[in-house]
Image (cartoon, rainbow, N blue to C red; front, side, top):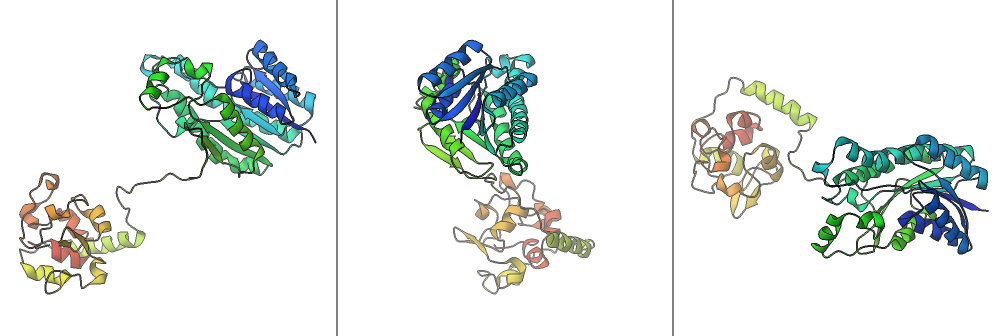
Amino acid sequence: MSRNAFITGAGAGIGREIAARLGRAGWRVTIADMSPATAESAAAEVKAQGGSAQAVPCDVLDSAQQAAALDQHLKAYGSLEAVCLNAGIFESGPFLDLNNTAWQKTLDLDFTAVLEGTRLAAAAMEKSSSKGTIMLMASAGAFYPAPFCPVYCAAKAGLVTFVRSAAEPLSEKNIRLLGLCPGLISTALGKAIPAVDDFMAGRSMQWLTAKRAAEAAQMLIEGDLEPGALMMLHQTGEIFEVLEQEPSLRLIQRAPSPAEVEDSMVQDAENSQHTLPEAAGSSADQACHGKDASSCDSDAACGSCQRSNGIVSCMTQEELAYTSCLPLQAPSDCHKASTAQSCTSAHCEWCESAAVGSSCYTEAEAKRLPSAIFSCHSSVVSS
């Protein structure tokens, strides 16, 4: 059974190499390009290598031309097993030097036209009862900053999210949506920007070849990766599957659980008439830490103690991160082990030291604490 592919921007660069590679592998290829001459040249190259190809003029910024090119493919070959939406451009200069029309064209070609191409390709596959793969040409720039082409990177990042989001509804129609994310490729498009060479020289990077990108594209199209998969062609030439469906996150502030919110409301009500106790010396510490103020006797009050550089605090790391005005790295600045020293460091400038003594909590924060910790930290404490 014949396998038939439709490739945009296939007259030159990566698209041309993909067409040639698929042609050698037995695919019949439609080469769509806005330049009729380069499309014909690429088709002739595929045929010269023993493959089957046709050239179709197509400006992907024109939805009607994309639809007509896909119709011409179906008339010639009857089915559509693979679509590679490859056409794209870099912005024409530094972002701050561009007007709206200039950078908008990059978004239109690299993002909007690709989404429209996906919609039209899916309709063509349904029309011909084809089970196929649509591969979008994204970029490693979707994951790594490239200061010389921020608009291009923004468009490619949009394609990455689109692949992951649209893959499921398309898979219900037996269409597999995938994305290829190559690094910097040695093509006329890439080498037309002088800033790229400077960027690469400062990082000891080497250009990738269009042939290597075409090899990765064939692996993606003919492989068995699940819908929504992304393949990255690293600047080293290594090929990776991008595994993370969700980004890795670093906690800045823990959100309270529903139970904690409810407990806090109850505690606020109980403390509404409560004033902070005067300095109580070590007795307040003992309520949380036991006789020697060195171990936490009450699991219910504060869980496991957080110790740092010999300093004992009745707060867990989680509690420190959520309610303390101190960074986790320096609990000793406020929670002195034995000196009951007041909190005076610059990063604790919000402490109400007059009312709270040496606590690193503001009065409002202290009132939200569980009662055992409140009684420990609302006086002149020694931990």
